[in-house]
Image 1 (cartoon, rainbow, N blue to C red):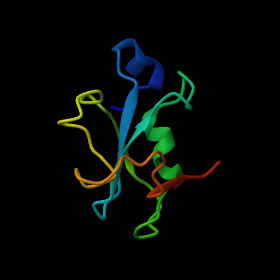
Image 2 (cartoon, one colour; image 1 turned 90 degrees about the vertical axis):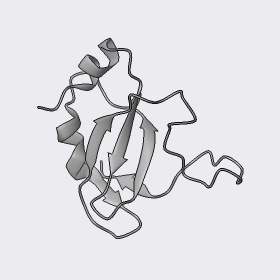
Image 3 (cartoon, rainbow, N blue to C red; image 1 turned 90 degrees about the horizontal axis):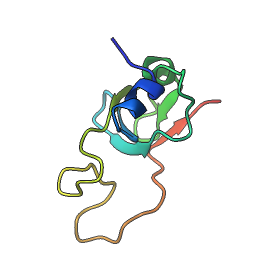
Length: 91
């Protein structure tokens, strides 16, 4: 059962992990989405820019804040990127 963003925030979680079936993934802040929205309602709105597939698996990011465990959109020796372009969301 998928939880709402509000329930996730009540647990102290502030981010989500978005996974495409092709293997692309990204960590995002959950701040843009309202408390009453379920994560499963958001999943069909993602489009992978790697393979073009629509839909993704959205999960709470339990490791956010621990950079040793976080998913990064770069190799460790590259400078940090401020905006990832692997996924886009539909309105």
